[in-house]
Amino acid sequence: MTKGQARGKGPTPPTEIPFNPLAKKNLGLSVADALLARSVFPLSSLQPFVGAGIYAIYYVGAFPVYTEIARRNIDNKFTQPIYVGRAVPKGARKGGFGFEASPGNVLYLRLLEHAETIGQSPTLEGYQPESCRNIR
Image 1 (cartoon, one colour):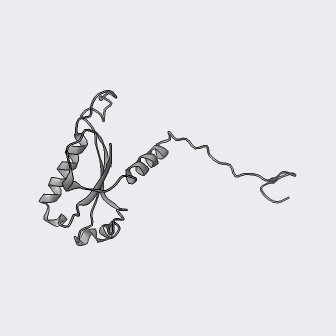
Image 2 (spheres, one colour; image 1 turned 90 degrees about the vertical axis):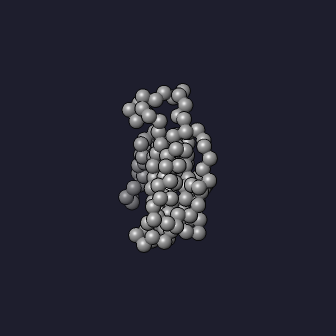
């Protein structure tokens, strides 16, 4: 009898841990998959919208410190964000924000803040218009 075989029953299947879709790791992977499935859009094209959520900003410029990051994002690859963040309404972090309440435009305002900061930074020259994706 070979290892892994029960008497007369063939190979035994490997022991697998049941998939728990609500485990933190799996929830995180689901959110990451949803974010990466979104299209990249120009920060400069932002129009006001309602919602809270997460976002990723990508760099493709020529600043030497970020060469490796930029290389991973050229040719519309966008595989290495330079920054990942979230925008939540005031009170949400401590559980003080109800499910029925409108989040307002916190995600839009956070992305607008990033766009303004990038525009003011001489070291970040070279951000391409296609530099962000988000889920809300």
